[in-house]
Image 1 (cartoon, rainbow, N blue to C red):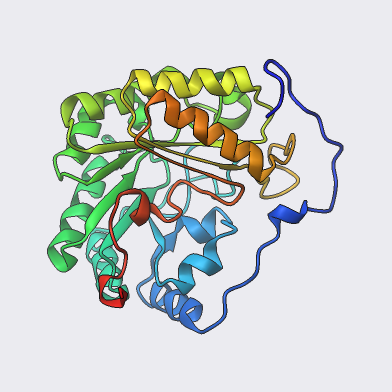
Image 2 (image 1 turned 135 degrees about the horizontal axis):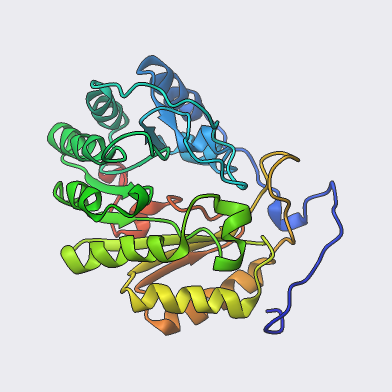
Length: 301
């Protein structure tokens, strides 16, 4: 790991380090998933956020559903999801998400959304309806990755009322970088959302995610991990930040796999129940395994 209180600066390079190169999966399951999503007119964070794991996840016949449209009301510096005038909420979207989960044979479903500061409840009731529709159609376990609802904890309560197995809200980065990376988000507000979830529904797993390589120091990162444990956050993912375009926040450095491993050890020592860390790790990457759920039990041996 780097010495504490330092940030390693790397000269911009067109070449990715060797550990950031990934082989594409073989087979046609990738196109099956894409065709189904197209047919049901569903958005995924996999596609809108340009996730490097999309081919792998689609080939596993899974995806992270992104509801409430694909236009976000917040201009975050790290994210490639389109910003602007949000779309109308589609009342039948929960049923379409449930149908996709059913046809993919999923036993663990992850649902996220764009941030909808234009809606009175920030889209919380839509999350609730999606959870209930998927569970009724499939019996699957669910993880929701929510926005901060502008700190409205009654909106968090609406989501929690549907009893998702995992409540996820991402811290994304360290407080010093919030203005540049997260725009109108507030660090303490995000912590409060996670704290409220655990305090209100202690049996629901709480989860968060942090991107590395934005310019954070190790001291700053450890402070965030300590804060997450202070609010009893159960599980954690850490991955490499990748700038979607040259217009987005630049990559400060590429974090080597062995450094991710060291940080994961430190995180576990703080009391996180599960930690997954690595260059390609994303918030919902292999989320079923983190939650201890077999994605496709009929394929087990």
